[in-house]
Length: 80
Image (cartoon, rainbow, N blue to C red; front, side):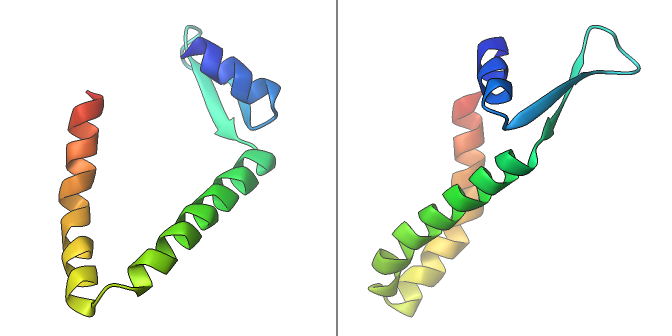
C-alpha cells in the first residue's frame, strides 16, 4: 500500500499529510488532478458500457440494474 500511495502522490493524484491526532497515521486527500482523472475514467467506463447496454431490451437492463447491489457485495467479499 505504501508503494501505491507513494506512486499516486508522485503523480500528483493524492496529497499526504500527517494525521493531527495520530502521528502513526497519514491522511490522504484527492487532488484536483486526481479528481479529474477519476472522473475521466468513470466517463470512459460508462461510454464503453453504453453501446452494449443500448442493444439490450428493457427487461435485460432492469435485471442487470437489480443485480448490481449483489454484484458489488460479491466483489467486496472477494477482496477480503
